Length: 78
Image: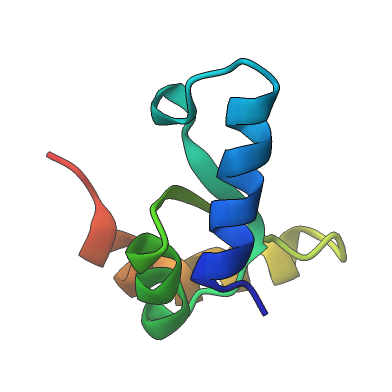
């Protein structure tokens, strides 16, 4: 699992490479559609979570998207 120490090490590596860590946007790909997980990532400084859609066909994808609706609405920006 990801923790603050891991994020800090990654940001330190970015700085050592000559980049400003404040210019980075942290994101996670394949994040579970679970508000607790998303909140944990947000607490670590992540500003983007990409939810996975199953590659098993349109019906499965639609079902997953329907299940994600409430979670996505909780974080939607106006």
